Length: 129
Image: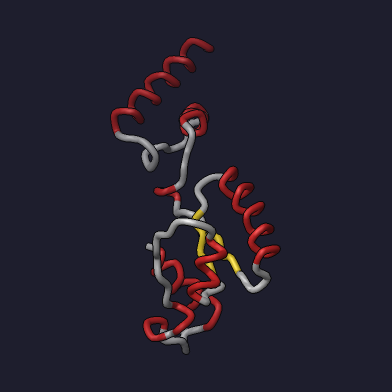
């Protein structure tokens, strides 16, 4: 999924003249480590970092880290990737609100949950009348 996202970004920014599969800009490695990220960046001599975000609070935290990273290593560049809707964190209250207002929640919940929400909000509408 990340590869496709990077390919889409490169294609959108560079046009169709770029061979994404052989492009040095498109290669990346996922690695685990212990210690400071900046130490790994310097050790590997790789100053571009991809970070995934799920929620607004992730962004706030990562933005603070980015400032610190730049103070520790000015050459570092960080790109944030946001999730597609099926991987996005959704709160139950948001889904309930969509259902309450008559929206389609089938992308977010199972058929059984969708039916229960519809039953709940249809019953509530009948009580108001």
